[in-house]
Length: 72
Image 1: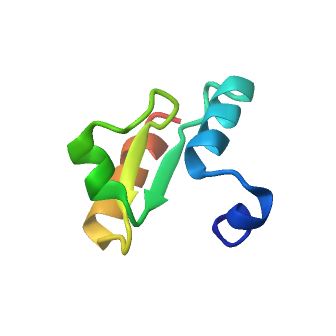
Image 2: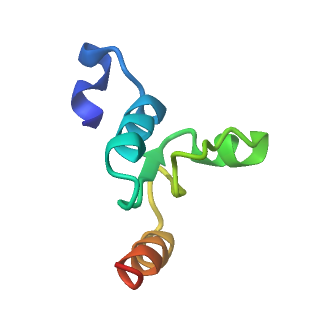
């Protein structure tokens, strides 16, 4: 999705909202270059279950994915 977001004129938060509306049971993890700023500004949305900053740190990625895969 990342490569086509500009062409579609949507952002990740819009996609997250649509996914949660259609499939509320599926965890939505947003990976963004603005992750740290979003977290500090409280910009995370209810539709996003977790935010990972780019570039991802392997331990953060592993921990986040493990948290949601363990509950699936």
